[in-house]
Length: 330
Image (cartoon, rainbow, N blue to C red; front, top):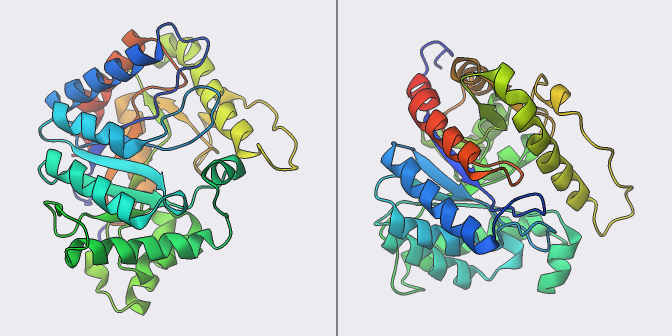
């Protein structure tokens, strides 16, 4: 087991959700086109990966079809891997996902990483007319069914990769163990999930040497934190508050209180919404190394854009992540 100081390379990527809140200037069509421009620029600058998420009925136009957008990004890029983080598996037919994923893999010449998870929002399940019961078991079954469909010619044309990697976006020790039992990559970078994931691999009859972890890091990188904090903080607050507000929609839980972005910037990660780091490339690289430690984490990704911020801020962040942060972790 390696130590944090001798751990190998970590690829760094970018994550997009295509929010278009009222405070953002420009149309939704422009946002989609600009995000594709940023994907192309990130690919040119050597980004390791580009990731796209899925939510439905958000009031700010959150991306609903990550595989569709990944297909568009595949046509505009040449090297970066393309991922979904995550696709809400129980909302979709395994055959539909198998066919769409195979198409993205073909367009990208074998660059797709399919991240799937259970989702958590009642309005999304209601929109699709499906139950949210046993959603973990149904997500596990999706992994098995996709492997079957791709390996037995169940869908045509098949993907380039044999098979496409199917990552599980599970959190906590129970989720990590579930991913291990399936021999699937685990979509979290946090070293705290590694023991349960490793135990699950062993219990599932897999060699722990196949372990792969990776995932999103809530962070913003800047060369001048003092200058940029007043500009970026409101967007961080909007983004986290939006997630928290939509999380309780359709439940009896009261609306959450607004977050303090300054507190988020100093917290250790207890979950995806518990922190949002802000600092120089060197500071964020150090925090990522501490987060990963001895886990077999091969890739991390940061938000390219947060909360509908202006295009120049997004473009600067994409460049900083690709040219300053990535070399520190490579």
